[in-house]
Amino acid sequence: MHKIIVALLSTCGTVSVFAQDIEWPAYGGAPGGGHYSQASQITKDNVANLSQVWTHRSGDYVEGSQQLGEEQTEESSRTRPTNFIVTPIMVRGSLYYCTSYNRVFALDPATGEERWVFDPEVDMSQEGLTNCRAVSSWIDPVAPDAPCGHRIILGTLDARIIAIDGATGKRCPAFGRNGEVSLARGLTKHTGFEYSITSAPAIIGDLIISGAFVADSQRPDVPAGVVRAYNVRTGEFVWGWNPTHPDHPQADEIGTYTPGTTNVWSTISVDAERGLVIVPTGNSSPDYYGGDREGHLDYYSSSVVALDAATGKVAWNFQTVHHDIWDYDIPAQPTFVDLTINGVTRPAVVQVTKMGMTFVLDRETGEPLHPIEERPVPQEGAVIGEYLSPTQPFPVKPEPLHQLGMTPDDAWGLTFWDEGWCRDYLESIHTGPIYTPPSLKGTVYYPSPIGGNNWGTPAVDLDRKIMVANTNHMAMEVKLAPQDSCPEGLPFPQRGSRYCVIMKPIMSPLGAPCSPPPWATLAAVDLESGDILWQIPFGTLENMIPWPFYHFVDGGMQMGGPMVTAGGLIFIGAASDGYLRAHDIDTGAELWKAELPTTGNSVPMTYTYDGVQYVVIAAGGHFTSPMPAGDHIVAFRLTK
Image 1: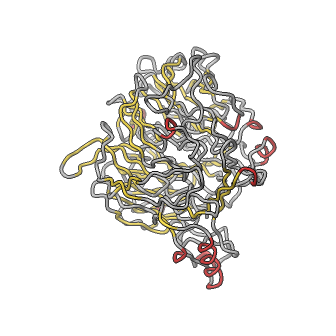
Image 2: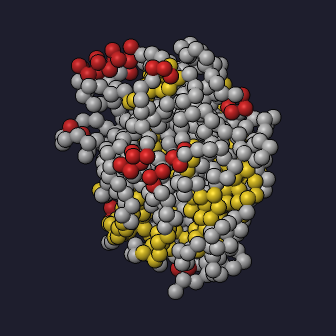
Image 3: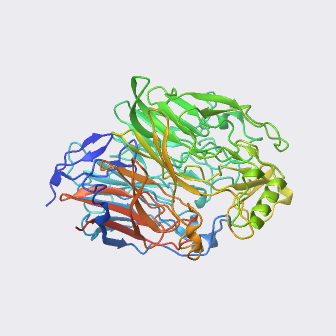
């Protein structure tokens, strides 16, 4: 039934000749992200007629009891709730997704019927995370219908890359050894939960490019954050880039990569036309104390770095935070769009951050397309041994999507009593503008280390040049403690440094955040002017507190991201109330919503199949969600 597909790569995705399907061929919808689709059958006028048409369940989930902030152990790995944050891809007439346990399913896009399932047999008792954001797809331009002519590329939690035949679900035996390569080679000794592939590898030409998640703040000599390239046909290693200072060796004489370097855990973007691989880097370990970091470890931390796809050499880099001790690593995929600013049209890369700041850079040079200023930041209150950057970069445009700092005057409460309690508490610790350093007394982080913006955002309407971003607005306290006084079981022990870190959200005795609502927003930004077009509270506290009290506060907690369509619609789950919503991109107005089985802490996607447009989202929860974990892939289409 299925015919050969001619892939027409563009910044808008891939359109196939099979039934004129509009595909979703990569995690971000395209190799340069954007979460954008040309599909326009669903419009503002008919979106109210969307109905659920199928659900697929894998069985790969644990409701569990372990929550954020508890120690990672082998036992807790078996009881911790799973995260299900995948975005399926749709290529060559099949829908592909990975589960929380790294199993891969191929589904019929119209019915959700299983075509095949592949099990990489990951020993989950050794893993601390259950994140699998997506699989990747490669089509052989010479022989697309040959065995393994279409390959699904899976990165696993136990640090393997596996090539799977897209038609059969079998391993591609010519790739590496028995269809896989191991990324453990070249790394220093580590435990299973310290090194995992959690984001889909990038594909450019015949290369697979992958970074990895490296466990935060465990010890200073965690495995290297090296980015590596492999031949997609053979699995042969091509190059590696370890983020050390250009004057410092990336590896020792036997090829072991220098440990402790910043990692690339989020999604990588590729520009095939320019031969560039653009990576978002994390910050160097340990996250919250940098006094012992050697200079070579900070050079590429919290940066957007462009690499030459053929060699892995740095083409340019731009650092968004200097000497990052706030865990403001770059969480989101660099997003490509062409912008006309001051009468000049340039290829841009748009980078959102945990600070709620958006950096708009020239994709070829890394130069800012909107002004960015180096401004003085707080220099008082750091712990003994720490040093601070005197300035930090602040974009003039676009405007920040988050308030940059907090004082006791910002305290909020459900009642006068708990508002007063919050004010007193904030007065007892360090507050101030963004980049106030962590302290022994405790310091407010606002934005917090979860954002601002995080891994699911942004979406960019490539025609309208509008960016859509969801933002968290919840304050956290970060407190350092000397190692000899650190309590047992901390999730961020920072072993080997002077200080451990104790972190918690700042909540009143009534359980409400001390930061003012809304605690989540959704915003649209004109990327060419840099202006915020609208910003609205996002989500509610429904399913968290009893009716009618959840109506009294706008904006609930969220984690996930949006996608946008040529029909002028934004689709987003993410909210803690467990709904999938559609918003008008021009006004922000909510046009439709549907209740999901649990929270959709993922990024939805869309495609057309046999002339019908579908919207699909993974609903399975996240460790930040108050609702139970699950394993649902849910599809909607117009039924009237």
